[in-house]
Amino acid sequence: MTSDRILKDWDDTNSLLWGQMPIQIAHNLDKSELFSRDALAALIEAYPREHYNLIQTASRESRRVWREGEVGNLSGHQIIDAIGAGTLWLNLRKVTDVDPRYRAKVNELFDEIRSHVPNFGHPEHTAGILISSPRAQVYYHSDLPGQGLIQLVGTKRVYVYPSKPPFVAPHHLEDIALFGVEVDMPYADWYDRHATIYDLAPGQMLHWPLNAPHRVENLDAVNISMTISYTDEEIRRLQMVNFTNGLLRHKFGYQARSRSTTGPSFFAKRLLQRTLRNSSWIRRERDSRQSVDFKLDGARLGAIIDIPKAAIAS
Image (tube, rainbow, N blue to C red; front, side, top):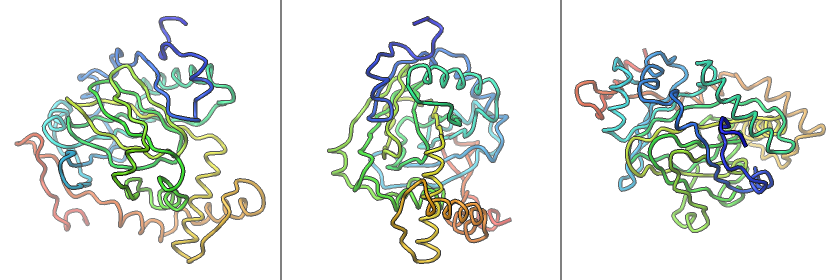
């Protein structure tokens, strides 16, 4: 394997286990200047508002906190410093759409995966950059696309759970598809006895089976990671089914039994999904679950300032 490859030390077992169980893979993206502090600070300053989420969470010792805010008028370096001093994480979503340099690098990564994994095909893919506080966490949740987590700076502990009931059930995936919120899934402490646990360091990548629930705890300094997401035709069809089954349950009180991605039932659901996915009811339900209510405090890095509800509404 040549030295200019992103993925290091790949072996045949990774090819066999990809998508079947969690696997940890070595990479060299942590050496790239694209993920240096200066490069990320500049990226943050130019980032479109519609493509980032700033979340205040809680340390592991505290009660659950989940609020969304804005970076305000701080510089990129100040925002990174604020994250270092608080319990925050910044998700630069769709960085591959925003900056062609990151798109080129992620395309290269997917080309390598394709060369190793039979039948991987050419899925649509995207990536995001996560910058998070030393003791921040991401609560128990599941994702609809295929997922991978690439660690670049700092260390984090990742708990990956089985992708089957009771850890994740069809109605959980339906709610995620319908409302666009991943972190409302129920969680119990005993789930951890059934998790596979990884301490992820720079130069390591983690991939897990589709829809496998997971949660993350940062362990030391500011963490920088990149998430990769991909959607092939089967995953896309499953998302349509999840959305429509959730819509039928919440809007019409009907519990759909079929999760088939072929046949007359699926094609009827696909039509319903295309017709109603941008309806006023969907927008209202999603807006009620997602609100921005703070901004970073430029005078006290790591602190936040509440945004009055009247200002949010305007």
